[in-house]
Length: 369
Image (tube, rainbow, N blue to C red; front, side, top):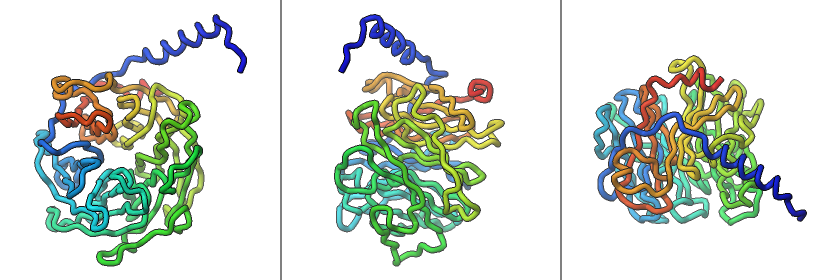
């Protein structure tokens, strides 16, 4: 390798300082403290009937059952439903969650994150009666690492973060499954074929993480859907969001493009949500940056990405109670507030919190031009 001239080193250093000096638009104004034992919060969705946020708490690494919690409109936290452990692995690790048009709740159980990558991950359904959760069903089995999940037009879209249970060299392959809700029934779990061979596996991409020499071997992660069925998938390690246009049946890829080509103030793309055009004048994407401990927003039309909030790693207890981000992994929009899960996989110290960001008064349409 050729030596880099000193003046170029100085220029590179100056440029990096400029990039990392980007100021966020705001900061969280409070933290919601979760009950004792409720650690590593992740997936969130808003109940369409009650406007409560339902939160998945995977308690990563622990055996036993796991809880879904409810955050009401006053930000009070209460138990919602207890998920039963996998009969073979002895644990359940809920990540992505989403309500279907049938009023039931669909859950990505990521057994790989729980410690078992051997095709044990699942899709679960929590059946609701009269708006209340009453029982749990296993719908799909055989997945390596289930992650983000969204539902549109009677179809479940699930991100599989890796398709191979073994540790592979870069580039690694990940992608998206699509299932019709109508084809899934209690007592007849669908066991998918591995390695992209299943007909429900509709889309794949590679992650190279060239910037960090493969340090972030994480592929498809968060997933979001626009009202027209456009699919947005996080490529965690490559810092990209992929836009996927599907055919009228929602199962065949018509077009695909990287929205930002890995450029922007973020260091990863984890959980994401689409803020629909009914809220702003056009769709925008909010996402969690786990590696950078930040929340960002992107305009999918031009790829422009801004920091919404960011703070240093390993905040102390008082800082977390005040709203500090702590290895955030998921976002959820309710009204003009953005709720952020602090999965805190690195240090895992109490209290475990949800950060709340007030978006009122921020002109995203103007800023993202």
